[in-house]
Image (cartoon, rainbow, N blue to C red; front, side):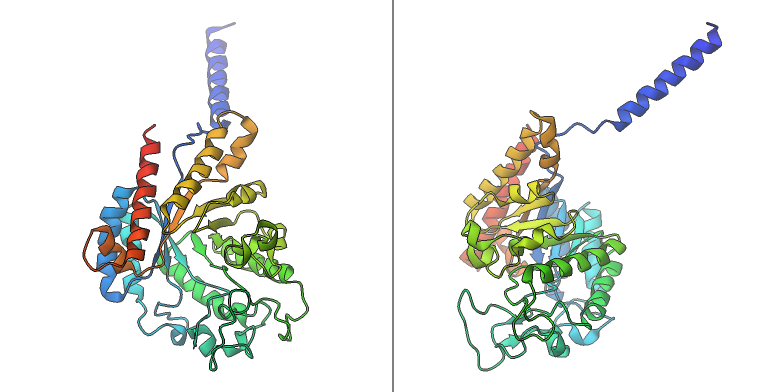
Length: 377
């Protein structure tokens, strides 16, 4: 063999070696979580600088790499100004928050409830105030007279998933937030939807709630996919409350759970469990979804959920087939439902913070301290 042929052959072998190595998956680090997420409520306008500073200092120090902001309708939408709450933040405010996230290398995810939570006890929410035709149950309280039906009766108003006006009303709101923030993911809510397939609805009455819910989830997913956005949603409507005994808050008692087999698998499921840590994240992983256990203000539950994630991911080192399941548990998603300024005040130990908020703060700190500890292994 001539020297030239030897050089060519050696070059070809080297290229083949590089290609083979490039096709091999990166080393899997069970203790390094790709998603270390936090959900916060949208701040009051005067508190936007406070949040931006908190993002760049405290959240970076804690190791947060994903921030979902519960914007809802507390934003001055240009596409539909009348649905905006009176004290909503502006485009300039929102861009300041997004810029703070960029500087901190934190992924930003807008969050809007697109099914339930369209009322608060005796008050109808702004979306149904302007578009009452979207109300799935216009004859069902509120408004006056208010009737609290208890745990298995009424909780909050829902949008009618079958109304012909629905998507042309909500999609411009979604699109505006994506455009303003440049987000590559969007959290659509969908939790605690107790009124779906309402028997008096002329469009939905008598239809299978699972099919209604599954079709709606799929339609939202398709729109977000066209916007190059990953869809995030809450888990509870996809869990059978009777079979699991998780009942109506953390799971579904209105026959929507079968929709889990009707929706796209590339949706990120946020599996909120605030009082304990049932093994529901594994259920979603086996079903083919990525899932983030989501805790709140109970430290023991948060730690138990985190341990489930580590157990699944660590098992990937011992059995090749389990790596797929492990990658479907990419991290955690700690949630806060308190006022953002109060949460920040609690974080810094300022006076006047309520005990419930401090429980949230302490859970957040303990959870992320454990994550940082594990990443050093």
